[in-house]
Image (cartoon, each protein chain N blue to C red):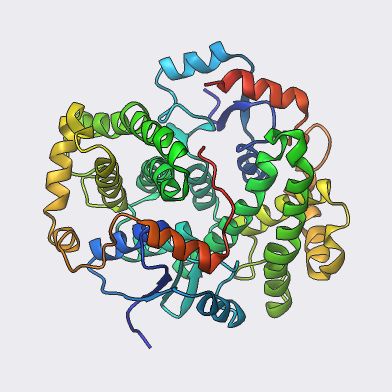
Length: 222
Length: 229
């Protein structure tokens, strides 16, 4: 037993990617098991490893953790990325939840039918530029600090850099009206643990392709 | 100004109901402002009160909090309903994640077409009885304690009771295979703050009706079809 957290998921981003980001940002090494077949998934269920019969699953500190938010909150709490008090935590939670809502659209995108993809892409662009990015642009502009909350690196910063890069993959010029976010992106990308995660060969997963979609549908078909 | 928390939402359950439950369970009195018109909503937007242009919004301790989960986390921690350490918190988060997913199926229910409602009804009952309830039944059976986590009343207990009652509204005998949950339901319902919340005249909201759906659609200009998941 290595003691490193062990992640079980498909070999792709999905709901596990924020967990990979947060562990990497915290400088925590982890192992991964990739689900490739339905049989693997059914065995996990039969073995009682999945509390609600779902992945992500993260084995950490003797627990078999499920529910993405629970996992992320635990990691953030454990590695001091969750603010210094209840109020900072509240801000981090608000920011993270907002970004998660935005990322949900990107998460579902590969699974939408071809005829809906253009509309969905417009929706992502619209929400990113009118609802979400302006909030974080304003936060950074107002306090003039390097990090979103409490002048200290936190889960919120990791979630924001992940979200920015994910949206840019779909809409390359999306940050053009957001100078604070451009500077933020550069700053975060240069933090040693994040820089390492952004290099080839890291556990970061590529954007979902057809093969990934096929695998997911095959494993989880109802 | 210390003041009571103030909740901004429609006059109905939706995403605010879990917050009402948790504040009530903690014995915290709160005020409510109900959104009835588009103008009210736009005024909130223009005033910059809604961080992501959405409700729920709760004014509490000088903050205008949005995002249901953030609000619930804050209340749970503030009123000591979030476990005694990181590991208990992790358990509570996992359990609440499950009941949240279950109640999510019910949340969208009023907005579905009649045909989809029938299908969704079956999904709710199936998920409750084969995926979610068995987990909590086993937790209670295995540790034989009164509460889900750490032998101490927590947010997880409040959320589970809320979920049980909501599913029972759809199928009244849904707990028939779950003796632990039946006992849990009786026990938690008798906690004084919860008992009070379950009485008529409390701020608990009734099952959503057509009028509620109309109000939400009108205020949010949400006229598109909601698809069942």
